[in-house]
Image (tube, rainbow, N blue to C red; front, side, top):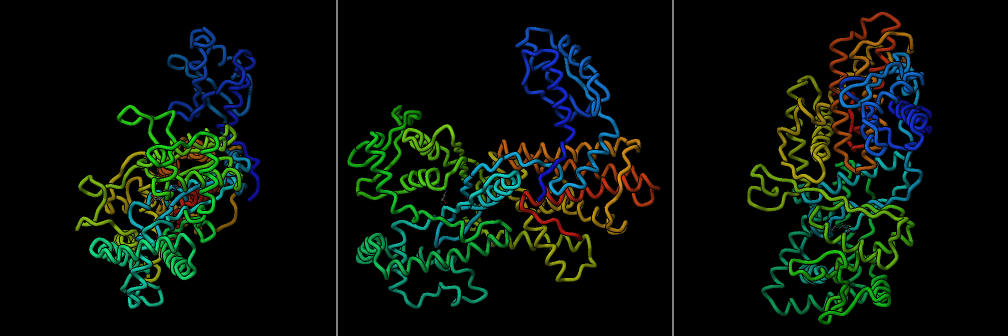
Length: 588
Ligand code: ARG
């Protein structure tokens, strides 16, 4: 991709306001120009309001001073009007708008600059547990994490994806022992038929059976415990079996990743077991620095920031009384490794909000240990729960966990109905393909378009609809524009910058101009729903434009200019959907 040379209008206007501020009020130079798109003008700046207090001037007076200077700075600004208590309503020239459209059209990056400057960013997401089915609980981390990774990578961050698989723990001793005692059990993918489901569902069931036997039969429980010791001691036969279980599970996860269209591959899998050999060192360092202390035979770190309900500092478990290490210790070794060995400058952990305290304690400990410094930014990207129709965490009718694969199958089936209804002429193979893109897209979009921290209800009827803020609506808008473009012939339209803008053209062009600031905002807030909201507005602005401004029947130069808007809208929709990890088909 070429590095963009296009400066969006909103940035040019912000720049002009900044220059005005530094000329008129040098003391406030460098202040945020607070420029936004506005319903009342092309752009609006609230800079006078934001600076008034600091400069001890009435906002209106300050705004008047700014307005006079801003009027004289020239292109792209052509008009400045005062409104309300001190807003600056700023208009730009038609010519500047068309120039912007033309420049963006010629730019692979659609005017979005690479603002992340190679920042090495570790994104920890998905992280299902080995030998356990991926369920609805893994949906959000996988989808949100993947979209953030795509956005940051596009903005020039050096993204390191990490799938922190739960591949270690005492439960594997039990499972391995059980498999050995039941050699006829079928769980390897080559032994499974079409209707058996994946090897991970088979393992999940066998694990449950093992658990039952463990609770019922003390001799089996003893053999299982011995097996845990063998696994931890690296007994070759036990390790070989464990590796097999991991690899079978990973293949099943890969099927889901492929279907969801997420970027995770085998290389990104760095499970909990990877940090085994680092646990002792990590703990020793914490003890040596006086951060981890003994408590009741265990080693813990007492928080200096968080107290529990009993008013006492919350502990982080570093080593259990039996000498074992758990989730906390692994995450301490992990953060240490990611900073010192992977050279992370930014660490993102995408897990549900119930893990907020866990990560707060991990970050605090890492800071006290000196691993996490001011140069490194660590954030827990928390999200809410997926709810069922009853408003409670989503479960199957029988009350079990909802398998991710079943959920995707349901989405496909529903999308097939909806798409077939809209376009009965589609050939079955094409219908299947589109239904998969629409169904998977809908599941992802419904998740990404709600504000991350909120819960949302999983409702296929609402998610897979041609109306409303859905991916199907956006995908369909995209196909409609592509069809106009096919009719027009594919050559790049010529933009005449002297054409007078219609209001609907202006609204669309300025919305297109906001793409770069939107993507930047997603990177800053790590909230993909802002991009969803933007794409939805864009598609609606396009509809208004298309209802008011004939394209194919218009005469040149109007036709060329309008085709340019069509092209740019299609490209922006498809690129934006791409950053969300959603396909933009040619036809629906
Ligand atoms: N496997 C964990 C779970 O299912 C999530 C791991 C998240 N990543 C981390 N570094 N702790 O809850």
